[in-house]
Length: 394
Image (cartoon, rainbow, N blue to C red; front, side, top):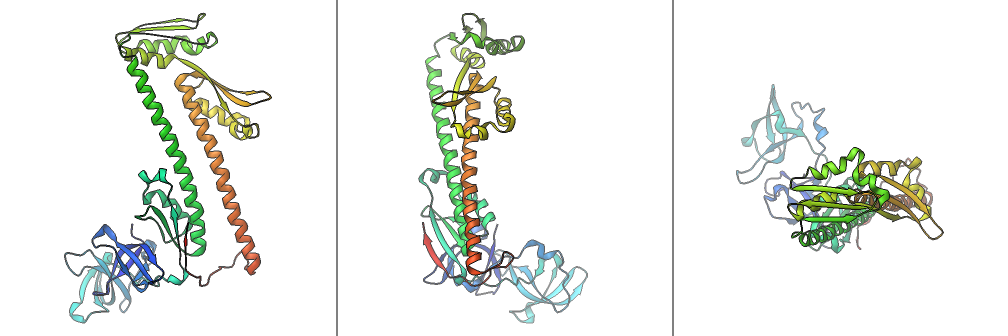
């Protein structure tokens, strides 16, 4: 969605568009037009203004003599744009308007829906703008796009948060907005990087599973052992898990010898035997956690662990401590244990990300407090004024 409007020097009307970059030396702004109907171009700042809020029309009741803006087009080859006009007469929902930049021979009748209040936004002032270019981490380049940074723009109020052709994130706005946006963008880099790493690991696991499955293609009998103490997990309540394995099309027989910890699956193909094994095989794995983090990981009254058990289907997650390490012992069917480990890791990543973001926010808050103290600005002061344009590149 376009956030700015660019003035045409030929028609004096304003077309919807966006800022893409600025040139501090030439004092020009690179703009793009909505739907790319026209190539990007460098223009003077005086031709660029912010789009009005949609709520401007809520109390819009134009009267004769009012200066308004009407949507029209200069030719069939161009999209509609906003033209300044004066209301000359009103008949119901129809308005006779006269374009302020053209003589009365161009007067016409328009409907209310094609009118809006006059946009009083001032042209962009480059003297209060700061530009920062953040290098995007290489692992994110294959999937990076502007939508990834919507939260950065919304949360900071910068005029621009866009990916450049040189694989940098361009931030443009006031000094305070760019500072906030920089902190938010770096958090996005970290979060998306962690997700990319998880996806890469998942892909590796998938490839390994495929390799193992190929080795089993020629077999029709699958056997594996388990801890006899986990017999109840393998069999399931009232034999539920064994019944599920037997109901797989192509599975002929499933035998469980609990006291020996042995499962034997017979089927008409290795594939169906492997499917049955995936339903029955159990695992016990340790998820190591630093002792100081245990409380945050398990949650009050173990609420986080109970949620993970419910989501993953694991049979149990217990705490094991010894003088050298602290771990959460996960017991259950193999897939449930792997899911529980992934959920635990994601929870740990979240806790770390939350801590980093909280520390970053506190640093920004401390900086605001120091600046207010040094400048004598009270907390409820607007803190306006003219800034100085800087071109910082990180």
